[in-house]
Length: 302
Image 1: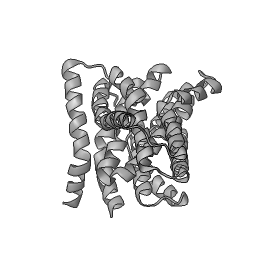
Image 2: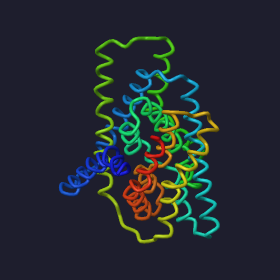
Image 3: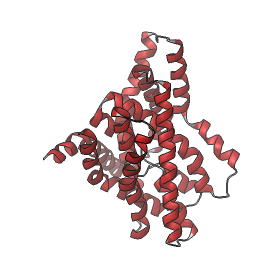
Image 4: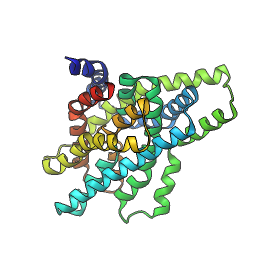
């Protein structure tokens, strides 16, 4: 009964809103790209800025969460590469497995989940996780997807395309100088931040309408298992090493167990990867995630 309550209160609202957007997208063939750009360039940075300036996380805690995010992602990608190598998979499937294990849905899925389950304090840490995961996506993710098609300099420049990073820098400046934002600025920021999470859930549903099916269950199963099972276990093991406790621990471990990021499809299209395989992994990991995240939230809430 307790698990059912956790599912209903924390995961079901995400599924219902995303599911409604999925049905709307199917019915009217809506293109998710315009909404994606609005969220990426406006709502996401406003959300991160608002979280940091209102909760005022210490700089050392922000650095700890950033390090935790990047290290856990890299370790999971390394494990995926090891498994793919041991199975002697071809280059294409191997890249897909590593990429879909590395890139987690810390934004569209992770942020609302952390908010519903653990509240605003944990959401602030999840915001740092989300921004750090974007750095990983635009650097390591791009390098993995390109594998020789793109030089290191070009790939690393992608980091500077992440608006949430500039929001973090600006928030740190505001906190450092102790500046109180004028009411009109704060209300603008709060208004945009309040729209970020609902917008992300709608975007998740719309993006899932572009799923292409693939029945290569062995390859699909590897990143799904790594993201949903090994990911949170790895997070539980790493978090104490970083000294993470309470809200930081809850946010970090929860985000570590989120499904594969829908944004991975961007790299699939850009670098001619197997789009049907990647979208199948995204869909299955998202569909199955309530089965793993519900008991995880229960454990973290005890």
